[in-house]
Amino acid sequence: MGVSNIDRHEIPPVEVLKVSSRSNPNAVAGALAGVIRERGYAEIQGIGAGAVNQAIKAVAIARGFVAPSGIDLVCVPAFTDILIEGQERTAIKLIVGPRN
Image (cartoon, rainbow, N blue to C red; front, side, top):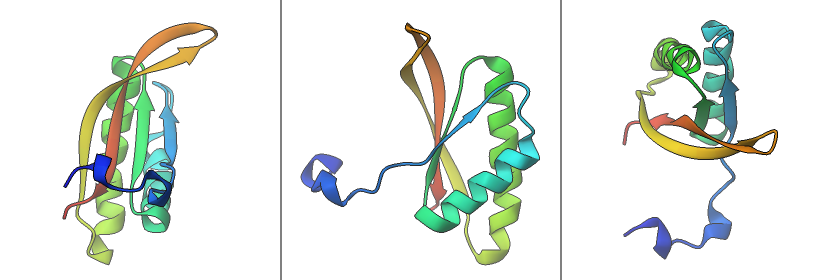
């Protein structure tokens, strides 16, 4: 059963955390852990190798934050197109949530 079979009004909006190459991975990990505890999943977006590096570090750190609660985090990488100052850019998004 795919998402197309689910009433989209029942899916809560995803929390998007935007990461730059200057983001502190510990701070992002804390925010990520909080969003996952509250909503069950989150999305991290980054443009460029430095931003994606910080995002991956944050996921690794967040796994340690939520593991004592019995949550085993996994992430699914994907591309997404976003508009920045009128220009379309391609970002990497990491959809992060508990392993089923």
